[in-house]
Amino acid sequence: MFLGFCSLLAISIPANGQYIPRQNVPETPEPDLADPTALPKYPPPETLLPSMPRWPSPYGGMPPRPITIESPAPPPATALPTPTVSIRVRAPASVGIGAKEIAYTIIVENRSQGPAHHVQVTNPVPQHARFVRAEPEPKDSAATSLRWDFGTLAPGVTKEIKLFLQPLGDGDINNVARVQFEHGQQVTTVVNRPALTLKRIAPKYSHENDSIPVKLIVENTSRVEVRNIVVTDLLDEGLEHAGPDKAAAQKREWPIEVIAPGQKRELEFAVQATKQGVFSGRTTAHADFLPDMKGDTWTVTVGKALLDVKVSGPTKPIYLSQPARYQIVATNRGTIPLDNVAVTFSLPNGMKVKQASPGAEKFASRIQWGIPSFKAGETKTFTLQVQAVEPGTVPIIVQALGRGHSAQADTKTEFVGAAALRLRIHKSSDPIQVGEKVTYTVTVQNTGTAEARNVEVKIALPTVQLKIDPSTVGVTVSKDPGTFTWGPLNVRPGQTQTIAIPAEATAAGKVRVHAEMTAAELTSGPLTWEEETTIVDKSK
Image 1 (cartoon, helix red, strand yellow):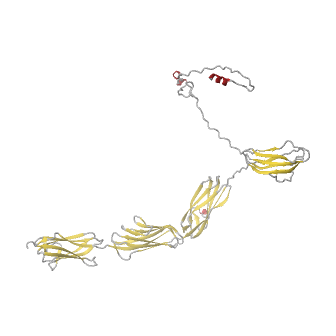
Image 2 (image 1 turned 30 degrees about the horizontal axis):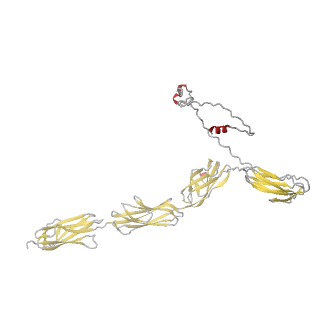
Image 3 (image 1 turned 120 degrees about the vertical axis):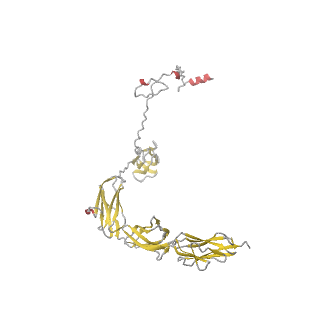
């Protein structure tokens, strides 16, 4: 079976059925595989040409040549496709005499990739024939030449017309259909024109005899360079360009050779306000191929700056322990608004701020409020509470600082200290026995901020139960043997003074030691203190 199948495969039968015997083709024997160990050695490096790469090749022979990969050239620009419109007419080759009508099929096709515009098909009514009808109908069915308008024929679109004609007589009918269309291209070349913009940055208000900073910005907003530019700035009388050239006081020019597309130039200069009033500045520019252009008109109001400030505070002395309250009133009495006005309050002698109205900023030696915009005739009020750390008369200075003018006001406040006296008696032991000694320590303390002068402490002890040594240092015995006086004393702020009074218990019972302190600062009356001691007699 295998041999028979192979025989069938080898049979070639031509179209005429004749058998052609197979021709024997001599076989070419395959070469043996090469032995890798017997491969020829690569030539030594010294036998290679200088330009030949030196690396071993597993297959021997010459090394591979370097391959240069070149980037493909960019494709040519694709041209717009040109439309191609064809027309075909199908009709019977012959008809018999007396035929009622002949059907013609007119096929119009756009075989290109481009649209065809204003496509029109015409078909004159032939001799020996009469127009019967058509699908679609022509523009004028009574005309001697029939016409169909298809407008734009898109790529690959086909239009078909069915035309029916009636033969007249026995003459041959020669029917001719034609197609016509329009094809064109429209291109636009943009002519770039130079264009500039002018912008001025300057304040709207200024002071008389003040220097006004001005910046002109010239920008090229077109796609081409603008050359030979001249920028001119014109000022009304009352304004002058700053500089030594008096001829350019009202008119100044800046030549600019070129400005690239999208670039700008900034011109900075100063204008001097010579008098009060409302004045204007106008900027113009001209350049090659550019009509004269005008920038925005700048209007500035020149007035007189006049700041006023007042301060009010305590009219009576203030204790150091109490805060002093001040009110500051700042007024713009000028004819123009002011920007960035600062109101300051000095802080002398380490004065501490206890409270301030909103917007206050604290610095080392002052409190400051800022007024970003201060209208003409406007008034601003600020309040502040401060506390002095030392007694004395303190000068208070406030200022209103603005560009072109400043104002100052001052007042004085007397800060006084207040003595705060305390009286205490401390006993060394309690209870005690008859015959024992007890020591009473009397303490006077000033916790205030002022010195207490002429302080006296009177001490009364019951002589029946206690006996005090009249030679006790620092006390004065009065006529009453149970009454002693300590003082007068001067007690500085924060100071404490003490005196020890020893006594001997002579009889049992409860005794009270009474102390009374007087001073000029104790306007509400003397301070008193009592200390009770129990004396016992164990012999009974």
